[in-house]
Image 1 (cartoon, rainbow, N blue to C red):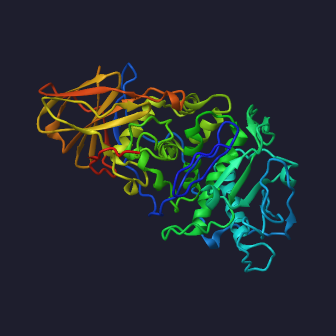
Image 2: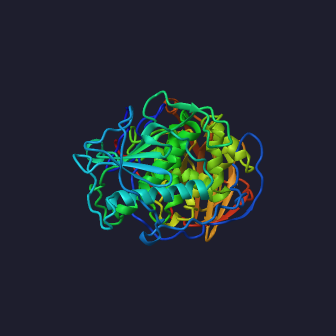
Length: 503
């Protein structure tokens, strides 16, 4: 099994096309405030120019999910421990394997050897309290993701593991493998084709199993309890189980991890574990969306996971179900084709989405945006000068350039990229589209003026990622144009230039 790893802690997904893929956890923050809202917008014209932000969600968001606290865990009744079969392709525990069964999950654990779980059993029901905590988190994740959010149930794997329940193995993986959890299909021959538990005809569905750490004793974050850490891991990994049951061969690696990380916050909003991987979208927004991260730049480390914010933008504007629609489309389409298909069902497209998302990064216009990092600025363009960036912009990425204000200015973006000029004044954010790479703005009317340089091209594979070069020329004069759209300031904090670090 190939393992993609990073520190200090991370998740993993292992599979037919993929192997272990990772994620980590931040400290919790306050509840979500409301995002900024669109005031007005005019449609944009030809040649795939950047588009204004969509005015409002086209679908109501799903019902608010009850947030777990120890007192609200689902009441579960456990029978006595059973014996765990030693099935081929499944983990072998270090001691005699026992099972704890819930309605939908069978948890395999041992009390002996390196894989031994903590033995404390406060209610004397023959199952360790740690295993019961895992069980409650699993059942809650099923309830949230399948019963409330409407994702399809995973296919049965009988007789593997002993019955049709989803099998979860508690094994020492954090110290030895630096993993918090992973999902696998066990062998490379377990593609079922169709998931019998859905009405959809899948062609690449697979059953799978989950492996979680046996004790999580390595967790010592004073801001996140061990139980909250477990809950986030479970929500993430169960999303992978669902993904296997929809399309186990989806080639868009980043979409697997971005979706699972996004789901953590959908299920356990108060934990806010996804904050720890937001460095990539805010400090390296010009990186290709498909890149794993951390190899060419320190700033885009964990990029696959940080792209959960791209999906959060989709779910905040168009509803949770639109993200699910991407994976439903992925049953027959791959990567950006699946995303484009799902976006069309809610009246938008990737070009429009990237424009709105890139603007939202600048103003931190998300429900929890006041807790997000401040954007990295590529540089400052001054009148009478030609600005050349350190590098260009990767596919589905954006550069942010501040333009020195004080007079009417003509802005010329030279290259094969698109752009959007953004002026900030008080609580208002004005958008000016470029026509053939040009815009004229009265910069004196704004406190801050920015050019967002957008690369709307789509790389088909990570190895095809590349930077597209450009220059920006700013000259005094020109007839100022009228703004094409106006939004509110949201949680805007002026971005600043930060030098790139060596990996």
